[in-house]
Length: 35
Figure 1 (cartoon, rainbow, N blue to C red):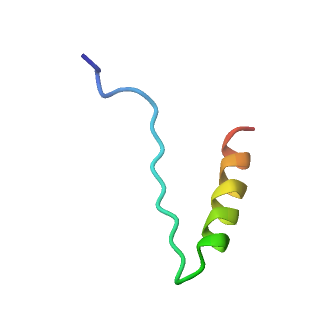
Figure 2 (cartoon, rainbow, N blue to C red):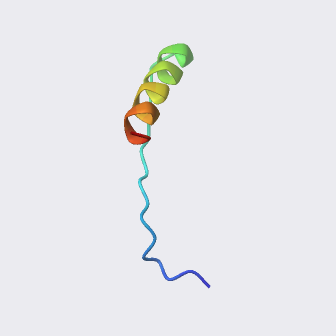
């Protein structure tokens, strides 16, 4: 059973009718988080 103390980050990335831009920004954020 999990203890609900695990570090978690939840981020919603949205774009109006531009999935490519959303994917690009998501990748930029992931790179920053993985540093």
